[in-house]
Image (cartoon, rainbow, N blue to C red; front, side):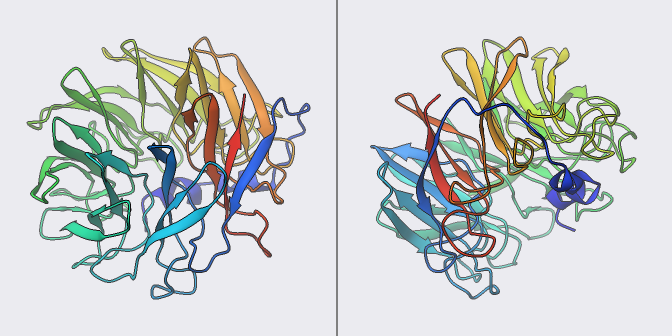
Length: 400
C-alpha cells in the first residue's frame, strides 16, 4: 500500500462527509487556470515555485496517458496571468511517473522527484530545463535504496537531500522498507544517508527536509511508539546530520498531534508544521481532523491549533509559510462547503479561515502549500475547477 494512503485509509477520508458551517470568508480566490485532465496535466498536489516571475509546478496525473486513463503526470509553467504550458509529460517509463512533490531551482535548472517510473518502477530524481528538456538523474529501487519518494528535494551547499517513505535496509509494516533520508548530487550520484528502523526513530517519512545550521530536520508519518489508530506509532520529528547521525526530537502520541505529512518551517529556531491527525474526540474521524504544532530544536512540542471545531477546516496536507510573522496554509477538507480552506494562524495559535472553497470553478481540496509573491499567495487545488465532472484541479491566487 502506498504510504500516504495509510493515514487516509485509517479514517481521515471520513472528513469528506462532514459539512462544516463557517462565517463569511475574509478574502477572495482568483482561479488562474483550470486543468482539463488531458495533455495539460491533472490533479496538482505540490507547492509551486517562482523563477524570474514565472510559476512552475507538477501534476500527479494528466500529461500522457501511458500509465492509465488518469495519466502519468506533468511539469508545467504558468504565468501570473494564467497562461499555462506543459514542459514535460511523463510517459511512465524510464523518465518517471506521477510526481507528487514540488520542484527546486538549482542554478537555473529545475530538479524534482517522481513517485513511480524509472528503471525499476520505483521513482526517480529528474532535472528539467525551463524549456522542457528532462533528464533522469537517478532511478530508485536497487537493493537497499530509497524507493517511491513522495517529497521534494532541498539544496544544501550543492548537494540535494530528500526523503523516501519506503525503501532502505529495514522492514516495516504496511510499507516496503521503513523509509530513508538520501542525498544526490546534481550530476546523479545518490546514496542513502539514513535508513529508518521503524521503532523509536519512526518510519515512513512522507515530508521533505529543511536545513537549519548544518543539520537536516524532518518528520515521519508513523512510528515513534505504539499509539494511534494503526497501533504503529503516531509519527516523529527528527534531525539527521549529512553524515547520517539521526536523533528523534519528539514522538507524537495518541489523542494529540499525529501523522505529520508536510515539511516543517523554521522561524528563529522554532519548527512549525501541520499534522493530518489530532485529538480523536473531534468530529472528523477516529484519527482526528488535524493540527498545527511547533517544536523547538531541543524537542519541546506545543499544539497551536486543532482543526475540526466547526468552521476552521480539516486535514491539513501541506506545509505552512511565514509572511511577516503570520503563518498561512491550506486544509484539504472542511470549511463552509467541505471543499477545503486557506487559513492563517499566529504563532500563538489564533486561527482564521481566509477562504472556504466552494467546490466549483474555484476548485476543491487543496493539498499543496502556498507561496508568497509580492504579497499575493499562490496555490493549487487537487479537484474541481472549470472542467466537467469532478474536475482536475486549479492554480489559484489569493491576497490576504
